Length: 312
Image 1 (cartoon, rainbow, N blue to C red):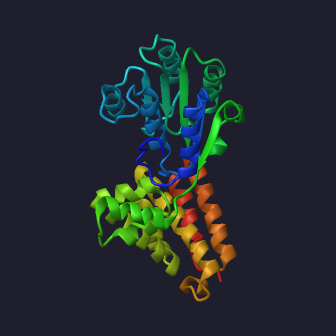
Image 2: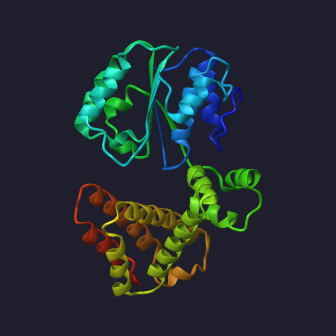
Image 3: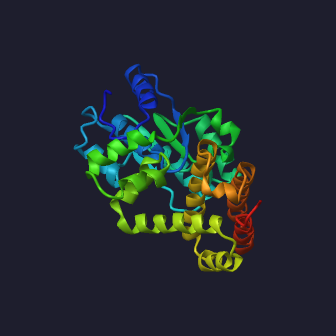
C-alpha cells in the first residue's frame, strides 16, 4: 500500500484506487456501494484526505486534521443524519461547489446518497454531468437499487463486500487486545468492520445487540404472539430501535441460512424448513421497505413476527 488507510480488509479495491491516483486517472465521481458499516464512508473520507493533503497523506497537517473535524474549506462532508437530502439541499451543495476552491480539489463526500428522493437525485444528476472546476464527488450507498441508473452510469463504481471473519478478528485483537466478547462481536458483525469496532468500543451497544440476538432467537424457538406483540409495542415509536432490530434480524437470518445448509442437526430445523427461513428473510426485507414508506409500523412489525411462529 502507498498510503496508511487504517481500513480493515478491501485490499484489492484500495490497491486499484491507489493505482488511479498514481497514474493520474481519477474520476470526477465515485460511488462506493456495499452493506452497512462495511467501511465505505471511512474509505471515502480517507481518500479525501489523501487527495487534499500536500504532504503525501501525513495524517497530521492542517488539511488532514480539518477534514477529520469536518471543517476543511474545500471538503464538504454530508454524513447520514437520518434526514432526507432534499432539492434545496442539492441546490445549496451546487452553490458551494461553484465557489472558488483554495486547494487542489473541491471534494464532496456524501454518505448514503439513497437518502435523496428521486426528484433530488435528478437535480443532483445535472451537477454530476457538468461538475465545476476540479470537483470530485465521493458517494456511498448501502442500497444500490435506490440510486438512479442515470447516476450510476456517471460514476466510477466500487463495491465493498463484507470482510472475512478471520481478518476482522485479527484486526480487533491487534487493536483492542484479547477480550472475552470478541468472538461474539465477530459473530454479530457479520463481516462489517464498522459495526464490530463500535461494539468493541461501546459496552452498552454490545449488550443491546446481544439482547436483540437473544430476543430474535427466542422468537424463533417458541410460539408466543403475546410476547412478540408486546415487543413491537415497545419499539414501534422509536425509529432507531426499529432499525437496530431489523438490522440485527437481517444479520441473524443470514447466519441462520448459512447454518441450515452446513449443519445437519440444527435445532431450529424442527420448527422451520430452509424454504421457510428464506421466506422469512424476504418478509423482513419487505417490512423494512414498507416502514421506510410510512406504512403502519406496528402492523408491519407484527406481520413479520407472525412469520416466526412454527412453520412445520
